[in-house]
Image (cartoon, rainbow, N blue to C red; front, side, top):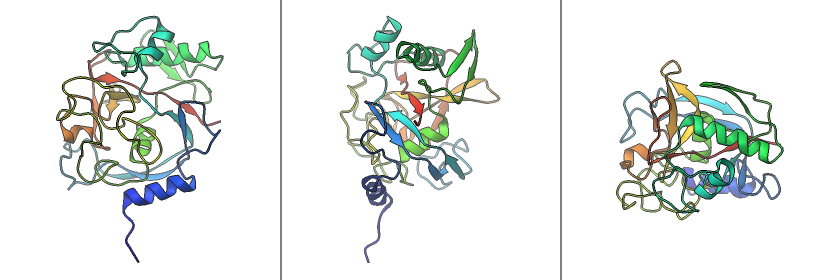
Length: 251
């Protein structure tokens, strides 16, 4: 019997409907991610591992949710917020130079625009999450990594080492962002989970001092776009390689 690799298994599970939504199971532009249990973090011997920031590995169970196929584009952001703060301009480029607070404000305004219940209560820099709300929100770190891996256990969802098709990073980005969806989707139908722009998650690290971003961006070296890589940014900070994608609770 042939040995099934993690990537091949993820593809088989996707085709069978595990973790990857069937038609009509998610809003347009979103993928339904069926809940499950996975190993979060990286093994101590993974090449490029970033200190102990990615471990120890542990089992995490996430519920079902939906996630945007793409990073939020500049067109989507401007339609909701009325402004485009990005350095690299283009309707289909990912929005960047947005803070964590900008991202949660976008989520609420888009929810209100579409008649959904906002996920967040925002009082200055104090943000609370109504976990039962059906509006747009940032994914948790666990949701993000679970979705990025799409059933794989390797450093990247394309294998143990990076390839040109994995995503936009320092070696192939030409020092800029690129239109969303140009690289192949992962096994669950999500694009640009590695590189292009780093993506804000819900959590704050270091006792709530710094918001967490995942996935790395166009100027990140290969080790910083791995599935398990996590980093933080200054409170209210913005960067030309930092954007976000949105999630929603599963219907």
